Length: 318
Image 1: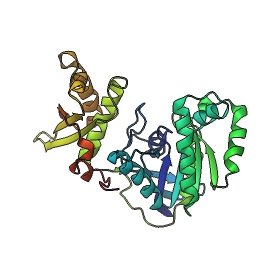
Image 2 (image 1 turned 90 degrees about the horizontal axis):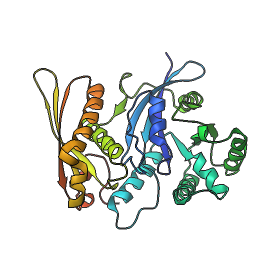
Image 3 (image 1 turned 180 degrees about the vertical axis):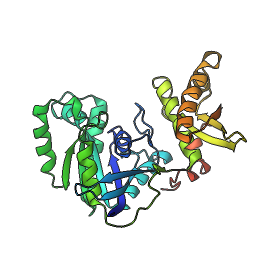
Image 4 (image 1 turned 120 degrees about the vertical axis):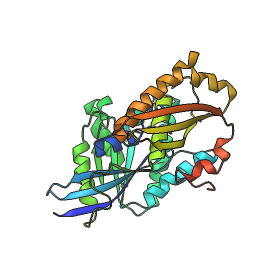
């Protein structure tokens, strides 16, 4: 069998759909997805087994990166996230730039809101970064299911004029449109050689960290409007029991005392719902029963705690 293997970095503005696209290419969920921007905080290596048009099998390691935006000088976490995104692109064989196409169009015709304006500005920031780099880049115009077909050609022409991209793909990562064409192109860009990971492995991420990510996703989905973005989850305990089940202890850190009762909910119902949803995903992922115990603590300055960065691969001093 002819085999290929290599790395493709998935970059773009926050909320462009990078993690949704990564999951679609892998064929299973390896990156968490929520309504909040900047959900992805560090590099996640997802492993996709893809085929070229000629039938070669390629192992494409998709480096799902944090969104690229302008961090405040005082925000250590944000600066570390942006640094991680560009590091992922610099180390890859190919860069895939994912763009929120509807937001770009709304802004172009003067109908966009403040979030669309930020999306366009961050997209242009990514383009400037790509222009400084020599690696080949693909453009993915995502969420095309939300765009009238007669506007797609105009959009393609606008991005083609930049001469930044080797190929442009029209994709809806959410419903799978265009994903097959992209997957074949990614496979063909990978150099020939042996696989880098076992064929049945879907991601290169420590189990404790993945478990924390699952709970953080459920936390954000359950409290999208009530809870500020800056909260985190840490797996403090992991014990395999004699019956094969796993006991997991996790702490949800919030930054203010007023946020703790929001996470707990009346009579502890909210945290029970979060735990039940996270436990189900963890059990499916690990293939065994999970006993999950969640605790909520207040830590105002967790973003400046160096120990919080060590397990995620983020650099503390950027």
